[in-house]
Length: 416
Ligand code: NIG
Ligand code: FE
Image: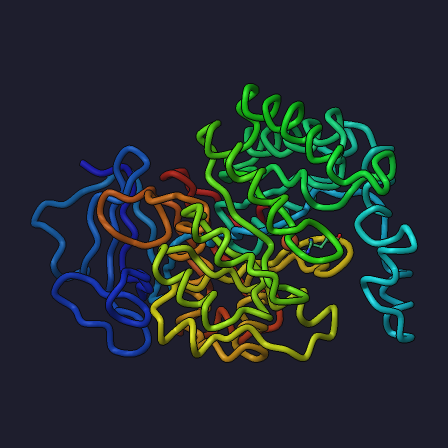
């Protein structure tokens, strides 16, 4: 007896081997597998196949009629800064008038403007912002979301951000994974003393976040105007000592060697990568580190240099796509829109974009238990009011979601 059985669905299983994934006994034919069925027991996928191959006498406590509609894994947004207060719209206006991101940051704006607003907000406000923004992502089909700190930069506010993320994960039907991003910018109280700030991060904040189990991973921003490879390396060594996996904002504005650095530390992911070199591609491939593409930031910063998608593809580097939701460079709260931009701006195929928001995104978070429709994986599912899997990335509207299933529990839309 199963807990849940979805019948007559078009399956995009996103298992490896075929663009939209395959099902035992039914090769994928370019638009997912029609006439599919999927069963759930104890929060996990217990059976996937063709409706007509269901075992005789198969029964479930609850049945969902797919009605021919598209069933996919729940979406995974593997890179966000969605906890932040304040607005940076005026900076965007200035950039439209010709100002650069670095010049705005050097004048005390940029990340530090958000740090001021976030420090002033208080924990309750941070939680309500987190709940509202995660709610927006859930309505778009997200079932797992990563949330970074990095707009507090002091002990109290960094931990408050991570706690708000954890709390939101406990209150909403979603998995929240946290990353400690202490090396995002040098805070004003350490102006001109980046090394002292690094000592504080290594000596106080990182150990406190690890001891309170508030961080699932450690991230940093490696750029000439942020932190050097040598500084990031010290952070990664310390993270390794504490048993925390690492990831990195790398090669966004320049080729600083960040991808090779994070690959050397067996990092989960290297993110952005517009300036990634051939050596960086090879390093990611050898380490099995995921390349996370963030086309929202590329668009909002009006970049012209593309990440080397063809080279990453040729080298077999798994490519994920994420929103990078943040107030300065990517105010984007829709993962399917990020998928669309990944296709239209970076040249991903629609199937690569969906793999990038499911299987590869799960891997970028170190989660081996989700991201595809396969027996034994967590039953995080989306049933869409759509027919063809490419519609998810094709649409610039929020695609119509009928039902989200999270660890086997059914949530019908609307989810806010
Ligand atoms: O992912 N690159 C650094 N961090 C963010 C931007 C943060 C900000 O400008 O507030 C990013 O693009
Ligand atoms: Fe980011």
